[in-house]
Length: 369
Image 1 (cartoon, helix red, strand yellow):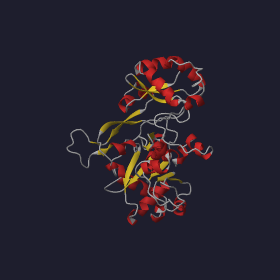
Image 2 (cartoon, helix red, strand yellow):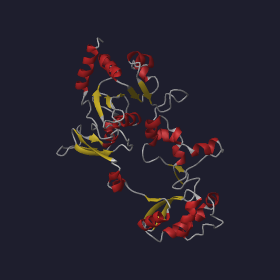
Image 3 (cartoon, one colour):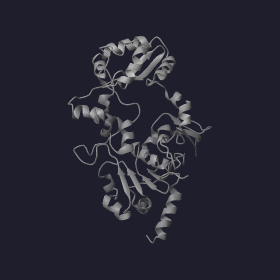
Image 4 (cartoon, one colour):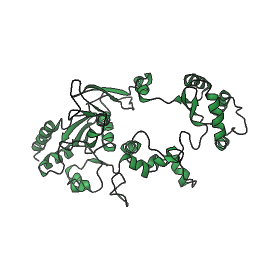
């Protein structure tokens, strides 16, 4: 079976993470993706590290080393190394635009115009083209010209103000602003219930640490040998959980979610004392049998080496032209009538320039362009 986007052509003019991640996801679904990079340097993330990796037998780290950051968001693409500002490349650039069904870019507003790729020119070259434009602060308003990297946007978009402990804002451990932008274009849209706490109730949320600000008990607690996450999402779950912690479900301090939030410090103290009597593994078994949602805090080695990741096919293996067989995070979505499987490996810089230049310019000549 072909992927659900088989036959779709994607031109990736983007750099770093948000745009390249969006283009990679389209490639995972079967689209053909061409990535345009700067000659000599390539995408910025080719230089983000360490860690860098090399083929077995290579010497000290150098030009042949590959950034694991770049490898994480550029599978399934072919690489073309050309200077978008070079008038000598204009014919090839416009051939790429005509070839594409989708164009992804994350330049600041106005840059595409200066490159000769304004909306009007794109429409003239390819009336059917869909353009995904991602920028740090959008194309309107006083901040439109600002450059936005992930942590700047986590800060400016409010996510860091919600994340952390002891009133100190902390960034999320993955580039969540870039990832959310790749998925649907903006970061502010992920605020959900935190946004309505302010917009409707007038509350300005602060950092909530490892505990949910509006549900209790829901957070990280201490078992005898490590942290344990417990989510008591409703009063039915509370009635199943309370006896395990030595509590009466009808205790007037804790009988409802609002009461539990009002006595949260006291509840957490009681729970940690009870949970500290047993191991994480012991508690996970007891909580599962009682129908109480719970989990352990896993490091990434345990995530990717675990049976669940293998069962869900969350690790893809591809043959890289320099590194040989490598493992990458797999695409998490499955389709009932279409295959989603590893395609091309992340490309070497400019690996496909000559091949694609010849093929696309041949098409232009055949069309009489």
